[in-house]
Length: 85
Image 1: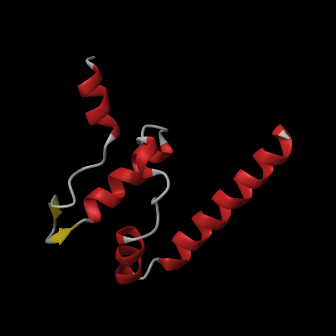
Image 2: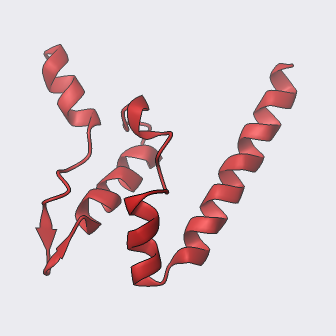
Image 3: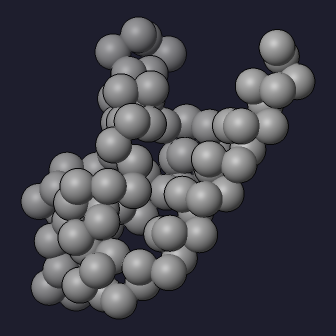
């Protein structure tokens, strides 16, 4: 696979991709899937779950899930730093 093809597979869908009349939602789901499979490009990790992701979750009223994911992520990061120190 060429480097540009590999790079393209690590990026999420376009925010203009539409499913059942909703824009951006398919992109957010694609980011979640790729992140779970460790296939999300590193550039997207910092903003994962915030900005438009957060707004989309708030609109869909799934804020609790996002908050749980963030706290789990923070706890995991904290534990991994303790083991490496």
